[in-house]
Length: 93
Image (cartoon, rainbow, N blue to C red; front, side):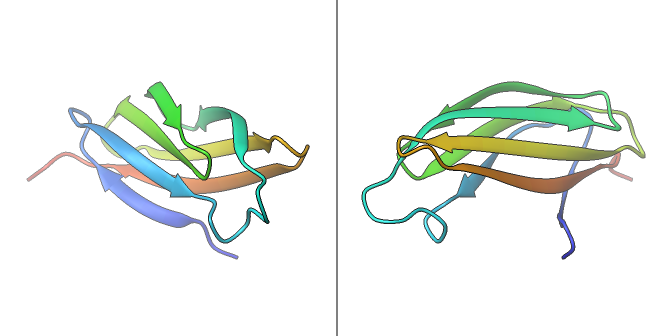
């Protein structure tokens, strides 16, 4: 399985929404999250969540970086799900 590849410039501060609608069952809901960035100077500035999705706000990074974002959610019924995606950082030309 390949990771989704998204793009941003080093100066962008953008939000990235991750939906868990297809994974969550019944009345289970997200009750916590943790996210990390690897292989880049990009930063997760903050995150918000609803019962079924997480929004991460990401800034920075250096031109040419490919950040590896790992998002882990936990649910009210004790489930844990990890979602990963790549974020390519590239200056506008």
